[in-house]
Length: 173
Image 1 (cartoon, helix red, strand yellow):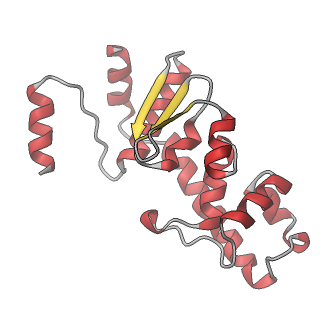
Image 2 (tube, one colour; image 1 turned 120 degrees about the vertical axis):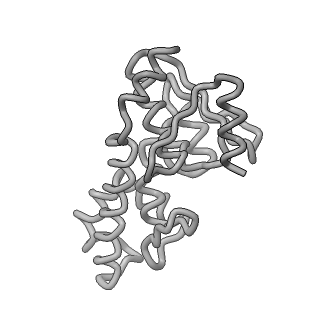
């Protein structure tokens, strides 16, 4: 089925970007960040709320399931309870089965939001782990694991392979 879509896209001469070893949301995120660096406006239409991390003054995310545009920090806060720059930390804390992220045991959405409101980042939560209520020392390793997941998620968006093709596509804009 995917191959047929590729053929159709190619037949209509629509630029197509795929990078082996990366999911579509990683490629979208990388291209969006590069486009913003060039001063371009970006609108992403997706069903993946992970891409809310990209919302800023130049990037709008339309979540198809919500039938809503997310344009400002406040829009993302209303949806997830955290700012766009905290979405990856939030995901590392609560986990995400679709992306094989286990999260921290005992930390759900409300706790993650409260922790990020108080400490700002996953790194600061980890630095203050002995002061964090509701997270026992048995979760200390899981928070460290969440930090490793965070680093992987962040590097995926910033260090995407196939950058030459991304540059070529942006030059066509």
